Structures are given as C-alpha cells and as structure tokens.
Image (cartoon, rainbow, N blue to C red):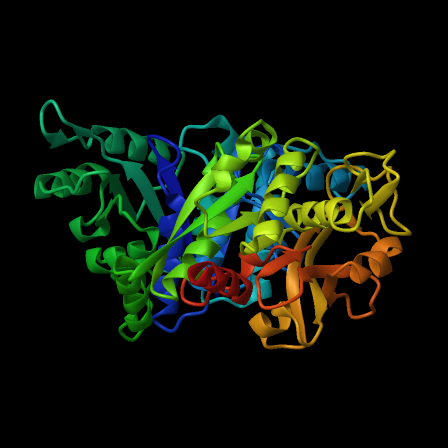
Length: 532
C-alpha cells in the first residue's frame, strides 16, 4: 500500500515547499523507495496553460501532455521520475469534473456539496496517482498558504485521507517562515506557532515542521519552543536555510534528519542512502574551471521563472563540463531598437526559448540573424526554432515578407503555419500539440552527433509547424532538416550545416534535463559556446 506524505506551507507564499518536497523525494529514492510526487493548486484555472508567465512562471509539460505547475519540473529534476497528468490538480479541474458528473446524473439527483463531492474528487485523484505509479511513497504538495480560503477543500481532503489511511500510513509536513529581525539579532518563532495553530484548526496536526530562514538558526531554543508549542518531537523540527544552490537542499536536509524522521513516522525500514553521486555533482557545481556567457533572448525575461527549465538545463550542461553558465537575460523587444545589437556583443552563445504571440519576435529574428552571420552558437527552442526559420527564409532565401501564420496571416510566405487538418478556430487552451512525440534523427547532423541515436522522444507545446510547402526551397539554400516525425510529415528540427552549432527544435528538450544527466542538446550547445 502506498504511504502518503502531505506538504503544506504557512506564514507566506514562496517558501520553497516544492524544493522541500522534491529534496525529500530524492532522499527517499536514495534509500531504495519508489517515489511519486503531486502538486495540488488552489487556483480556479483548469491548468496553467493559458495563464501569463508573469502570473505563474513556466508551464511545465509532462510526457503525457499535461500543462502543469513549474514545481513539477523540480520534482522531475530531483527525483528523476517522469510525472503525468495526475501529478497536478487544480481547483478548476476539480470543479469542472464534479459539474460534468452532476450533469451526467452520476450523483443521482443529490445536492452537490463541497463535502463530500469536492473532497471526494480530490481524494480520488490522489489515490488514482498512487494506483497508477505503484509508488511506495506519494509526496503531495498543497499549493498556497494555510488560511487561504481557496485551499480549504484540499486541506479537508488530505485530512480525510490521513484518517482513512491510518497511523503510520500518512504523514504531514508543514513548511513555515522563521523571520530574522536584524534590529534585535534574533529569529522569531511566533509566526510558525500561529500558522500551525491555523492548520490544527482545520483538523491537521503536522508531524514534522520545516523552518525556512534566510539566516542559520543558531539558537536551539527556537527548535525547543516550536516543538513544545506545536506538539512535535524536537528532532521533527527541521532547519532549512536559504542556500546559494538549490541542489544542495537534499544534502542539507539529510544532515538535518528530515528523511530519518519521515521514515520513522511512516514505519519504513530502509538502508542508508547512497548520495555519493549527488555529492560529487554539487562539489562540481562549486568549483567550475571556466565559464560561459549565454544570452537568453525572450519576451518574459523580467520573471526568470518563466524560463526556469531552460535556465536549469543550461546550468546542468555547464556543470557537467566543469563550467558555470552565466545567463544574460535579454528582452527581445530591446533588440528591435536602434543599437539593440550591442546587447549581443559579448556573448558566447544565444538561446531563444519558447513563447506565444507577436510581441518581441522581430527581436528574436535579429538574434538569430546575428548568430547566423557571425557563426555564434545558436539554440532555438519552439518559437526560437520558428523565428530562426523565418529569419533564414527572409535573409538567406530571399523570401521577402516571410513570416508565421500566427504573426501575419496575410504574409506571402507563411513558412510557419497550420498544417493540413489543423483549424484556425481552435481554442487557446487544451488544443496544442502536447506531450512526448517521436523524432527521427537524420544521420550526419549536429542533432545526430548530440543524441547518438536514430530516434528520440521529446515533449511539445505548440500549435504552428514548419510549412512543408517550403521544405525544398529552404533546403536548397542551406537549411538542413535534421529531425522529422517518423512518418516524415512534420519537421521537428532544423540546423545549418558544417561543424558549428546552429540548431532549432520544435520541441522542449529542457523538460528532460537533469542536474546529474544533462540533456545532450544543451550539452552540445554549451560545448560549442565554450569552444567559441
């Protein structure tokens, strides 16, 4: 039977519950346990797919095509397990499902209520994930902050699961802020006490309390006070101080005894964890022998979390080569201004990530042209591939006015467009090409050198495609189609010939990169930038 761990947060949002949950997952997996992870989000959107990146950061896409919260990226990177559509649940999805069931008559005319219908729907999703994965332990994070009205049905649902599972089969972890007052030179535990009291008022008593702080908590009296007032053992009060590198978190939490407390609380007898590979990886991160400066040209760069997986994948690839990746965050619209090109002058490579809409695309075209003309390593992802194709069509193939059907429906040369069978009347949400799709890798290409495989599977999130009407012409001008769908119908990757790294892919390889196993395309890109 799957054992449950529920992670809640208190005092303020943005405490890093996701990192705590992901780190715990890594520690339990290192003890030989099969671990699955899940995020419950209280917002009413059905999924984050149509939300502004400035509102919610990156949309992380699972292999089975779910658009999910960015915390799932942390889970996959730390635990190194593929998550799925059941790994993220929002209030919007819960209510949508319940309403559909009511309209179908599944409740037999009963009055539909928060309890039991909404809570049963939440519980059903948690149990469905446990059944699908067969995990020894399922870690479920509840988004938001204790006291938020939106989160109350989720808290009630996990309370019920805890009671139904029985003692030793469910465990509650509460992550809270312990502020440091510089004026008095001391940490304050009162906000934690109030947060736990709020949680207890909802029927959940935490078994473990994780104290988040920017400064190390030197006063052991804080731990004793929290233990006494919150009714937990002192060794179940765990310090989690802000770290310069988030991949240190599992090591620090292991030293603090988090996994030991969890295993004891769940009655799990496990061997000592093997964290040697993770320790070696973190040590490499701290002692790079060289550095590389990468320009990330995007339209949402004011919020770095909008490109979280891309940034992490760049760092993974650099660390694997004993280097550090310095990211220059470049607003694509700035490249559209006179003298905007100066922002690209001191770079070792340019990466243009995904996005939607017209804004900033001319700046992305300028970045692609700059890299192509100067033989600078270039990596285009999704929209970054599309803008590179448009730029090549205009400036190398002489197709004046070439564009995407998304940006200019009246363009005389829509080199990026809907493919036959697609409809322009599609809704914005839930109609993208999503999830893992196979890609046949053409031999003798940069793609082939990086992957070392004839076929790969990568995750997608887009509506528009490379137009097959322009394949022959653009190939004749020097653009190489290096990745195709196995049936040859869809162009998945393009590149420029020779030894230089100039690659565009329609998919999102960043989602499959791991800190101890970087994605081969990011490795190839960083390698080319280091050799520049």
